[in-house]
Length: 239
Image 1 (cartoon, rainbow, N blue to C red):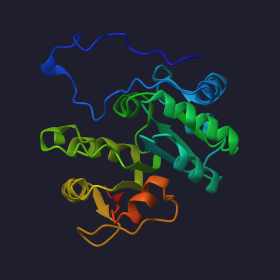
Image 2 (cartoon, rainbow, N blue to C red):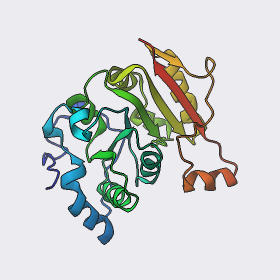
Image 3 (cartoon, one colour):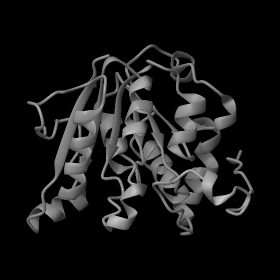
Image 4 (cartoon, rainbow, N blue to C red):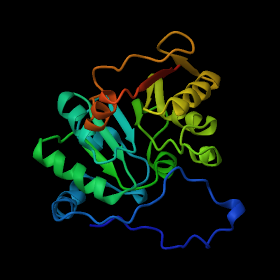
């Protein structure tokens, strides 16, 4: 089974009507191991937009807290979290196919059966597949900071997007953001503090300590050794 993509090119929609995307699709090839994992495990663990709204209890065969990660990269931290929380379920979204292949390989290697995965744009997944008021946590770790000012409009964390996320969270559900770019951290905090229906788990306008459930990545450890900061932001749905 393969995930069929829209074949329409970038000129199929007039420029003024195109959605600004927060990512650029890279053309890197999968390694043989990633390809083998994708071919072997995607039919069972992969999810398709065409399937419509998900029923989590049917999907995982049980009733459990459900966490959604947007942009899991190569999937190492997602596998670690799922393995450490066997009583919870996880859905990952990643547009880059090598990362999906790597995640599927890690799920098999570490017997993390409580993950399902989309290889699609998160906005499309949210709109078509995630029921309202259904998620216990949404996590977005180290999204592209688009550090040049002219590219700030491409940043994922924007007022309209966090309201889209709020609709998908249960009452009291958590939106957890993390970044190692101070400018983006300040931008995220401004967006969240201005967002209706959210409440900061830390003091007003304050960042949170890294919660135990978020693993420290190799990239993050390397950055800490170089003196780079990491900022965690945790808000709950309060309305």
